[in-house]
Image (cartoon, rainbow, N blue to C red; front, side, top):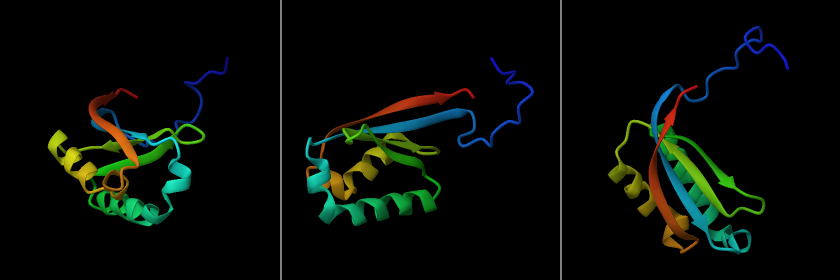
Length: 106
């Protein structure tokens, strides 16, 4: 095994601390149905990222079965409000979602 202490440390993507994870579960045919809503969904994410609230977003699974969104410096009500304004949620492409605390240690 390589000596990881001697390796150059990669840049931190998320510093240690507490974040909120928003987990989406998608409809089984998300790839076929998302087209008309995708630009709005991505723009919604870009605005939240530009505001410093959303740190990362990405699909889970191949094909996608859901998504994970990472928020910082917000409360659960803010994350719920974000979900409520997401075009994927409004279009019924998200079958369920939940918010949970994620503690990053390294």
